[in-house]
Amino acid sequence: MDLSNRLAIVSSRVQPRIKTLTEPAQLRALTSPTRMRVFQAVQEIGPCGAAQIADRVGMKPASVYYHVHALAQAGLIEVAQGEEGQRTVLYRSVAKSVKVAPKAGDTEYLEALADLASAGLREADRSQRRALHDPEITLSGAEQERLFLQVTSRLTRKHLRELNRRLIQLMLDAEDSDTPTTDRRYTIVIAMSPTE
View 1 (cartoon, rainbow, N blue to C red):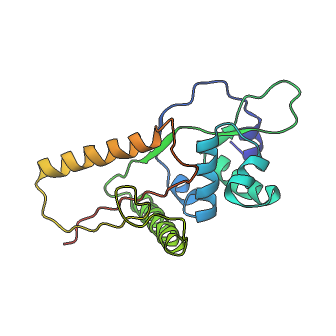
View 2: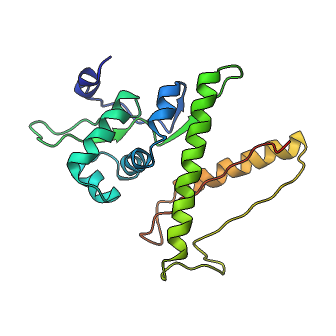
């Protein structure tokens, strides 16, 4: 289905909580830090127009359309149902969250996943560096806003399952926060991989 057909679809279905990214192209669409910010803005705001997205990510609305087009082409956002006669096109994420589904032996998918992880780590690095120079950021104490932890440990399969369960639950809890105590947005990246 081409983009014009994809954008012509007006959806009234309920947004699922999690979408599994099964195609390498979906992962590659998110390897651009700017596109990732556009995607996150659409997820956070809900149905929104290009002007709202641009305001959230600090871009001009005309620049946002390129990224919206790529995200729609990858099936990550869609046109939201609008009021009849509405002139502004509203976009929404196809799900509140996305997850990956790597398959052993699918080299193209695994390479795209590695590219996505690298892009996420680069964006986290940029956020960390900006935070170091922001005098309003709390760097220590119970409410510190910049945190870096690195642990190297041997884990049993049982410990690995429990760690995965807890980390996923923490991320979902952070995402579901209905009453934010600050207007500040946070980048939270968790990277885990075998070292040997």
